Amino acid sequence: MRLISRILLAVLSFTTATPAHAQADGIRVLLPAGTLSVHLLEPWSPPRLAGLTNRFQAATQADPVWFQQFVAQVPPGQELPYHPKFRLSEAEYRDLLSLLTDSVVMKPTQAGILEILATPSGIRFGPATTFAALRGLELDTVANVVRTTFGVLRGGPPIAPSDAQQATGRWGGPRWSVEAVDTTTITGVVATFAVGRLVATKERMIYFEAKRVADGAITAREDVLLRAAP
View 1: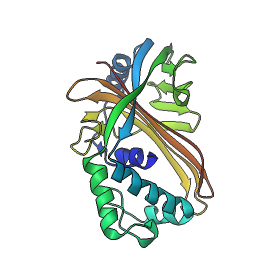
View 2 (view 1 turned 135 degrees about the vertical axis):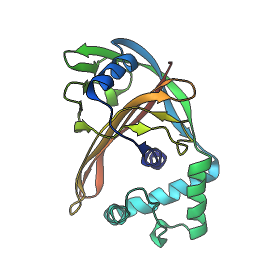
View 3 (view 1 turned 45 degrees about the vertical axis):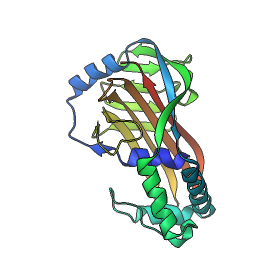
C-alpha cells in the first residue's frame, strides 16, 4: 500500500513561506522537549482497491526504469495518465484513481513515543523513539534544515490544508525536502519531512517519507505518518 502514501503526499498543496523565527517558535510548540505519545497512521481501504493497487504495483515494479521515466514526463500537479503497461484496463485504472481519492482513510494502529531532545539549534529524535525511521533525525530551526540518514532536507513551501487531504483530514505545517535523482540512471534520493496540525481537531501530525534508488531499484525506504494529541 505504499502507493497510497505517495499519492497522499502528491496531493498536498503549497503556500507561501513562513518567517524563520515564527516557524522556530511553532516547532517548539509542536515538538517540545520530552516524550510525546503518538499513533502510527496506516491506510485502510476496501478490498477492491487493495486488489487493483497490488496489480498496478506488480506491473510498475516489473519495469521500474520505464515507470520512473513515464512519471517524469508528467507535469507537476497533473494526474498520471493511463498506460496499457499498468496491466489494468482503462476503466479499472479510473476506478483505482477514484477509490484512492474517495475511499482511503488513515486509521491509528501502533502506539508509540517520540523522544524529543533539545539541541542548541532545534530538536533531535532520541534513541527511545519507537519508530526506527525517525531515530536520530535532527531538525535545525536555525539553518532551516532537517538532517536524516537520507541526507539534508531543506525548508521549502509548507503544506497548506486542502480538501484533497480526505484520507487524513485537512492539515498544514512546515515542510523540508530533498529531490536529487539522476534521471539518466534513475539513481538518487527523494525525501520529505513535515509537521503540523489537523484543522478540525488541532492534533499534531508528523510525516517522514524517504527512498533511495539505484539504477531504478529502490534500495532503502521509510514511510511514517504519526498523529499526536493537541
